[in-house]
Image (cartoon, rainbow, N blue to C red; front, side):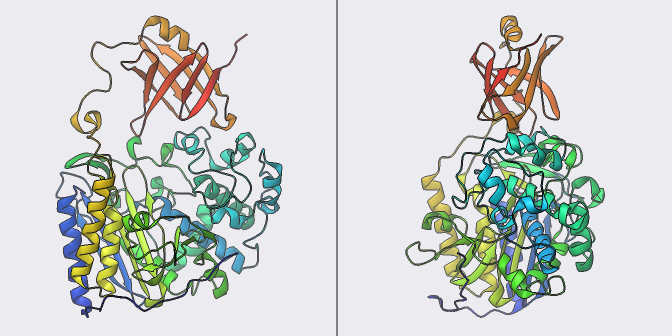
Length: 522
């Protein structure tokens, strides 16, 4: 059963009236201050207030160390899982056209949808996938698409018959990217065109989001920001979104309905306006749109967890937070006001958004850097910025905002370990340790093709020698295996991740939290 948001206008804090110009100036100053605390090369901010774009502003540079590449309102960023909001809206337009319904079984539109769990196969609905209430567990199967085990989304969905699911049917909210990859194929089946083409025709073009694209290779190169990693005051990058696998969402910068969209602050402002106008002009039936931003599944969170992501007045004993379709947080948690939000992250970019429909207010923040270890506050910095900026436009007193912001930062630093920066990524230390080698006996023992034995969906990997190097091909990538101080562990380095490969015994290895067995050869 779903529950409705109830707008609340009562807040314990007295308001601090500000002119629009003061709000804009405060927001711009605040972002600038935060960029001195965290070494984020570039950011962009979109604020829609009273259904009008009041800020679409760029900060810093597209490429670390290059002052001649400023971020503007038209600079393009990977928006990661904020893509899911676009996918959900695409489904809403098809529901609005009466071509499908939210609660249609997936198999009704996608007969090839096959699962080991036959009950789930027959009864899983599109709504189940959109609200993250499927048999796919949190982040299960992500490595398969991240390394390109399957060359296309369609191929991946066709191989779900091999996916060993561990959740029971409709067990509750659990974040899975595979849900949205399947939904992308449903959109294709219903609209009779690829999801990215349907998105362009049904939403992006009518809104004039001319620079937003579904995959990096379709973007205008001169508008693209590079991606970066940072740890404490160290920055790795810039990484070219079109060339460097460090920041590739999927191999070859292809499509992924769960997270491959590229957009800008200027274009996002148009999308925000549409959301705050309840889909007007795109979705005719308001009830269809409202289903997206209604809590469909209860999300179990604690007060400290909500505080860390910028929702300070959440009390589990008296408030409920839900997920909508394409939105992770739905509830009265934006300084006591109704809101819905979606964040997004890739290897080198972060996105934060929040929308307060009762005030016609939306804030979206884009960053071209992703924190890696170091100061634990960096992991919540973007969420805290989003919350602070929202508070500025809601006229929350500055002293209150400063107190709430600092309290969240202090708490995470107390409760979360400071992990030293990786010296390979940020210090230039080579991955291969001098004097440490993989023995010839180990190389010969590892050579072969391995199939995932615990979850066949994860595909096969081939280990072979090339000259003196031990190589592994898995998915779209073929790179060396590197030695470690443990003779039973080697590592596979593909830049965007470093995967330990553990020797379990003769013909058996483990990686990506799965076990693999060597296939017998004739």
